[in-house]
Length: 425
Ligand SMILES: *Cc1c(COP(=O)(O)O)cnc(C)c1O
Image (cartoon, rainbow, N blue to C red; front, top):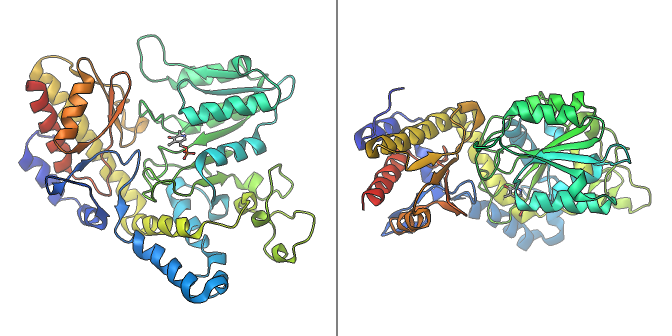
């Protein structure tokens, strides 16, 4: 498509957008009585208007049925999570019985590592990306130490090449090959939170399996954002949070995927709790854990139904919009943002804004990370004053993410217009 940097062109794209009306399903923070330009759906997705209603239903059942709400009412809590696994399966590309909604993300990373990180004297290393999200780094380090190894030695971080911002898939594969005999686990993010690079999950998974190791992904920035085919790509496990692109609220419940190969194996190692036990015998309250032979067998506790309700509200919207339609819009929306930013550089005759997110469509999602050569913090503050909600990362990166469910092409154009004015001033 030949883009133009004009308001009329952006509005025309909006007029032709079949998903345009989904914006009305969300609550926007206001700036001078108008909707903010909200570009931080990669950090906390907007609140769907139906969230309070879904939560209210659970509260009503609690009020009128009390403990009987577990089994009675329009949506018994015992089976509430069943509403979630099918829509999620479409979003992450797996079978319904391969995913489960439980806990929060860092907790799930630890639980998955309990199952998939079994270091031995020979094989104890973890291969990951450099500058992974801090919580992931802390999880890896503490797991390594827990097993009696030294993180300095046991964690191999793959960095971009000198002068580059993102990691080449080739380099990831060759590090995995090089350390094939001593690696216990390859654990990457799906999308790096800082650069927005979408890693080649399929290739990394293949390389890890060729090296004889398990492989998993933290999909915090990928779930609800990019196309995922976890089952088909043969990924061993994954987990994600649901408050970013999945719009399920601050501290929302997390999700996990376990390939059916392991999920159906009741004896596969895990930390157990009563909610992972066979449903037929769970309430007999007896000894000897008998795992549910699906991803549900990893559940520990009674599910947080109020949080599941918020998650359901959002997943209902994903179902209605259709994940494939969202991917189609995302590609154009983010491509338009790339175009606008390049256009600003051209007009200024220099690269004031360097996009460090990959340009190739299959290597990125919604997010665009902009490295600002000069006065980054001042520019970010000026954006905030103009009603743009973006994200600042030291030392000099502004992250923005136009989200296909609720952002418009006009948002993207307005953003470009505002940043262009700030640069002139
Ligand atoms: C957002 C994010 C987290 C946050 O973890 P919580 O346990 O939900 O606080 C962890 N890892 C990555 C990669 C993230 O993007």
